[in-house]
Structures are given as C-alpha cells and as structure tokens.
Image 1 (tube, rainbow, N blue to C red):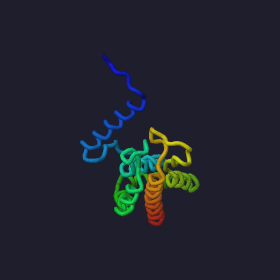
Image 2 (cartoon, one colour):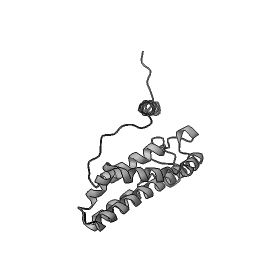
Image 3 (tube, one colour):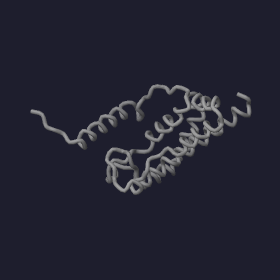
Image 4 (cartoon, rainbow, N blue to C red):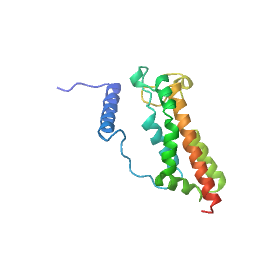
Length: 166
C-alpha cells in the first residue's frame, strides 16, 4: 500500500536527501568544475552562498537562516574567508579572466549582476515561501555580504590583470 505525499512532504524528503549527501561528502556537495565563462561568476557566487547561508523554507530555526546564524556568520568572518579562497582558486581566476574578453560595459553588467545576487526577503515578497525562493532578513544580509565580498575580489583580480597587461 502506498501513502500519497503532499508537495511539502516531497520537498522535505528531497531536502533531507541533499542534507545527508552533504554530510557524507564532508560538508559540501561536490560540483563539476565551472567553465571559464562570464555567466559562471554568478554560479560560483551562488554555490558559495548555498554552502554557508541556509535557504529559508519555514519559520522555525532549523528551517531558516536566523539572526543567531547571521551573528555567527559575521563573527566567523565567513565572507572574508570565502573571498580569500576565491582569490586563490584557479577556477575563480579563470572565470574572472573570461570577463577581460568583454567590452567594459558588459564586464560591468556581469559584476553588477553578481553584486546584486541574493534572494528577496519574505517581507519584500509579502509572504513566507516554503521552497527557498525568499529569505529571512538575516539570510538576505548574509547573501549580500557574500556577494559583495566575492565581487570585490573579482574586481581586484580584474584590476591586477589589466594593470599587468594580461
């Protein structure tokens, strides 16, 4: 006999499966390497955000990114650590290098898109979303800090490459 599941129950089971996969892989899901293309700047950023900023799928502390999570995120200087990792990452450097082939206006557009890559808050949406399309105020703040940190590193690398004539 099969028991019909609601959409919420299916989503919860999928989330548990992802969490278990994440635990068994040492805390991070392995991703295929990103190609050095401008659009992958946002993909790299989003992967970093998902690794450190929990999607908000409900009001309970284990379902969302809380103020306590934000305090720990800020105290731990997580965004700065991720930015330092990105600065040393051959993958990130190659993605940033792909921006050099673009006209300055297109390059600026990609950097602006990355800088503004974060979820709207539930307050901005006017509802609490259950599937991660919205975020708590704390979650959005952490995503914004992460976006700003990684975009700043990308801009620094671009300036270095331009200065060195690469």
